[in-house]
Amino acid sequence: MERIKPQPGIMDIELYQGGTSHLAGIKDVVKLSSNENPLGPSEKAIEAYSKAAFELNRYPSSDHNSLRAAIGKVHQLDSDRVICGSGSDEIISLLCQAYAGPETEVIHTVHGFSMYRINALIAGAVPVEVVENNRVTDVDAILAAVTERTCLVFFANPNNPTGTMIPTSEVERLINSLPRHTLLVLDGAYAEYVENYDGGASLVEANNNVVMTRTFSKLYGLGGLRVGWGYGPVHVIDTLNRVRGPFNVTQPGLAAAKAAVFDRAYTTHCRVENARCRSWMADKLAEIGVLSDASLANFILARFRDRHEAEACDFYLQSQGIIVRRVSGYNLPAALRITVGDESACRRVVHAIRQFKNGKRV
Ligand SMILES: *Cc1c(COP(=O)(O)O)cnc(C)c1O
Image 1 (cartoon, rainbow, N blue to C red):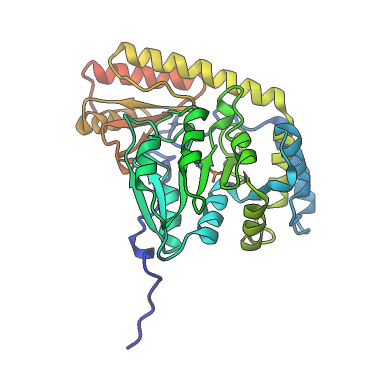
Image 2 (image 1 turned 45 degrees about the vertical axis):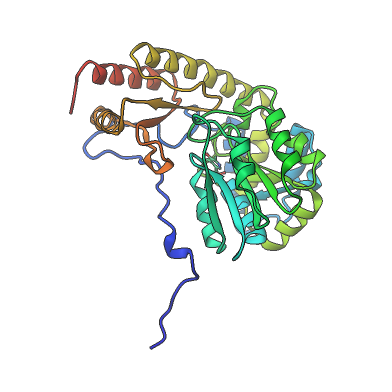
């Protein structure tokens, strides 16, 4: 009898594990597991979103003109080369749909974002995992893995869940040695947290095979709305526009994102506040022996002695109403990723980890 079977590769995909948000029986839970902005979205974004409620009968714009123009203006980019998506996850998916397929390879790093591998498998391609250098993207390791089948290379800069970043000179070195049939995707989900960093936009402009992805989910605090964007060469944007659905971003999403990108004072406030709380948290944890690499994003990767200690600490934090992220699925079993919360959340998590280090257990 015929059997209904998905395409090869699909059943190799493990379900994406999102950050938990509830703990049974605990009321005052602080969620530090999904790299969300603890300060919430800009009030201007909320206002634009509320206004859009009165036009829910209308289909959204399909060319995203107004949001693309706003992004172009604020980031000083050519808005014709901007594409908007349902989160930057969709841009990653469109890239794999358009460029990856059977007989091709997609490179990602050992502690890279899980959606690269998942979307490569959906497209029928072979995901190729390369090592990092002590939790930092290793350009030489990427280059060593490139073959004539490599269609895409993905890495995030700064990277999630490591928080580390490589300098533009290193990215340039990678680009200069990549073959012309390979498209480099610079995932800039955390670019806004780095002062005076363009997320790789200038590298997109200087090359024919570099794309940048960005999101409104992290610094802009709009993860619930699902809005992201990409910036690339004309030929790539034209290709992706053929693949994407015409109404892939909702009208409230477009309106709120536009208001958010123009609210630059709030953007700066969130970046400064994140940096302040992040360094306080990292310093306090280091004092009690919980080290982390210098993070440029809105989380830190706290390292423990081994897997057992990391797990025990996670259980203890849960008992205290604190949710952080286990990252064994990212090949980091002895670490916990902790999102930078507001000041009181940072104090709470540091206090709990100190108690744990002093021998407290569930
Ligand atoms: C959060 C995240 C994204 C995706 O965010 P969207 O909500 O889909 O825009 C992409 N890449 C990395 C590395 C992330 O951490």
